[in-house]
Every structure is written in C-alpha cells, then in structure tokens.
Image (cartoon, rainbow, N blue to C red; front, side):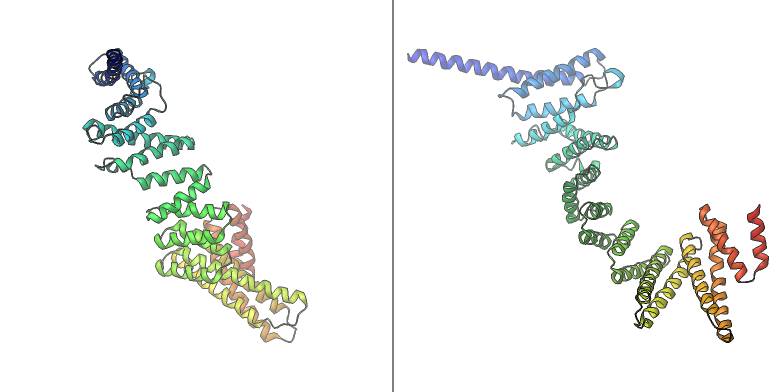
Amino acid sequence: MKILKKGWMLALAIVFSVGMQAQKASVETASISLRTYKKTEEKKEIRVHNLKEAKKHIDMAFKNSTTANDPKMWQLRARVYLAIHMDILGEDGKSCIIENEAISIAGEAIINCHKADAKEKYSRASVAYDAFVGIAVSAQGIANNAEIDSNFARAIQYYQIPRDMIPYDDESLIKRQNITSEGLLNSIAFVEFKFEKYEDAKKHYNELIEMGYNDPLIYVDLYTIYLQQDKDTNMAIQTIDKGRMTFDENKMLKDEQIFIYSVANRSEELFVILTDNIEMDAYNSENYEFRGKLHRSEARKFEEQIQEIANSGSKDNTDELEAKVLEHTNKAIEDYNKAIEMDDQNMDVHYELGEMYYIKGADLLDQANALGFNETTKFDKLNAEAKEYFMKAIPSWETLYNYSADEKVKGKAAAFLKQLYLKTEQMDKYKALKAELAQ
C-alpha cells in the first residue's frame, strides 16, 4: 500500500511539474513571439503571425493558476498588449489585433508586475520601464481623444490608468512626460464636470484646491457647481474668494467675484473688492467701469426708496436719501470718466456716461420748466446747468455714433445727438447729422 501511495504521489508530482513547465513554456513562447514581432526586417505576415501567437500564449499563461501571479508573466503581458495597441500592420494602418481595451489590460499588468515582483527583477528591467512609459502616454492619449469625442466615461477610465501607475514610478519616468497625479486628477474632475457628475467633480476639485493645484479654472468650475447646481451662494462666494487669494490677477475670477457679490446684494464688500482691484491695476478701464456701475446701481436703489415714500403719501423727509443719490451719481460719473481716460474706446462706459449726463440735464430742465413765471433767475440758473450736462453728454454719444459696431446703439446715439444739438443750440451740427442720416 505504501508503495502504491508513493506511486500516486510521484505521478501527481510529475503531472503538476509537467503542467507548470507547460505554462512556463507559454510565457517563453509569448516572449519569443514578441521578439520576432519586433524585428522590423521580418516580413509583415511573419510579424502579424507572431504578435497573434504572443497574445495567444500570454493569455494562456494569464489564465493558468501556476503563472497567474508570476511577475515575468505580468511584465510580458503588459508588453504584448502595449504592442497590440501600438501595432499598425492591420488594414488601413490599424492594429492587426482588434482590442479596444489593450492599454487598460497593459496598465493592469504593469501594476501587477510591480506588486508581485518582490525581488524587483522584472518590474525594473529596461523593457519594463519602456512599457511603463508607453502605457502611461498611450492611456493619456486615449483619454484625450475620448474627451474630444464626448465619450466621458472612457476619458475618466483612461485618465485614471496612469494615475494608478504613478505610485510605482520610482524613476519619475511618467513625470518626465509631464504626466502628474494632480494634472490627471484635474483632467478627471473637468470631465466629471462636463459629464454632469457634479458630486465627484466637487470632491476632486476640492482635493486639488487642498493640494494647491496651480490652475484658476478649478475654482471657476467648482464655483459654478455651487452656484448653478447646489444653489449655495455662500459656498460659491467662499470658493471664488479662495481663487482670488491665489490668483488675484485672473480676469475670469475677478468678473465672477463681482457678479456673485452683486447677486448676493453685498454692496459694501463689493466696493472694497472693486477698490482693491483698482489699487492693484490702476490703469485698467474695466475696474473703474465696474465700480461706476455699482455706484449707479446704488443711486437707483435710493431713488426707488424715495419714489416709494412719495407713492405712499408719507411726509417722511427724504433729504438723506437724496444726498445718497447725489453722492453715488457723482462717484459713478467720476469712475466712468476715469474709465474713459484709460480707454477712450470703451463703448459700454460711453453709453452709461452719455445716458447719465443726458438724464441729469433733462431732470434739471424739468425743474426749470416747473418754476413760476416770476422765478426768472432760478430758471436761468437751472437752464444753464442743464445745458452744461447736455454738453458733457455729447462727446460720449458722438463716440458711440462714430465707432460703435452695434447698429442699434448707433441709431440710438444719432437720436440723442439730434436732441442734444438742438438743446445746446448747435444748429450746424444738427443740420449736418440730419443730412447724413437722410442719405
């Protein structure tokens, strides 16, 4: 019985040994086939055959338990599938083996090679390093193309592949290709943002902010999610403020900060922000324009309060409110003039300033016309002041008429100019403009 038992054990050992040798032979066959495939001097038919043989045998070794965690098998599997991805021997210069996920398979294989290779014999070989770089670069290329094609799920999948490889990049080979974990995470977050996976995008953008990632757009995208999707104005403001602290000169962040503070009716804080912007860039026309618009907006708020009091029939004194209207109006005019000083072709400011001067002149003219017949001195004074404001309005409307690219604005400017020329008794200009418009 003992002899019989030993015989069975020997037989099993022989079978096991033969099986192991057979699977190791699969790895060797795949290796030889890959080497032959890489010989560019060989005939195309031979190379194609050998790449297919390499795939067949490495797949056999991958599926067999005796070689399933062999670092040599993982290294070779990574190289074979990278070769399949890079191959151009098929029809129309495509791979002779159609495998859309070749780089995904190769990426998994090269990572497993590192994990299984305790002695660092196969994972640190030169061919493994070459494959490592090739897989990372290829994966990023696939992700970029998928993003362009709006295949967002595939883009995220393939941006993640080199990111998973980076912990094993002991020689900074991927980093030398300008592929970094932070950069890939930024790409993933942006795709998630476009893909409307907002919770994932928020998580990853916040991670990037904690890392100090150097891109102002991460703040803009995160701010947009908080504002438009979450309807969370406070978080939107916190995000845009963080962005401005890091990128204080970024125009997009500046504009969005002005917008959100305006929407939130946080005027006092916005005046501070706009004044800081002017101190940082005193020659920027837009900085004065934005503060001028805020002053004008504040003046309108106080005008509405005065009107509400009048409509209610209340006898409340409105002197303080009227003083605020005057203060903000004058400051708006001052900022607009400064904006034009910095950029005399700022059409938006010319429109605002021309309109303000005209309204002020018309208001004074209404006050004069409301006086009694015996108030001649006051009438003349108000008329003179009105004419002065009309004269100030003319240069802006002339600039709009002569240089605006918007035909509607040009038409409105012409209508204002005809009235202004009449009100300021500039008949020669009035007749010339009228004749020009009649052509």
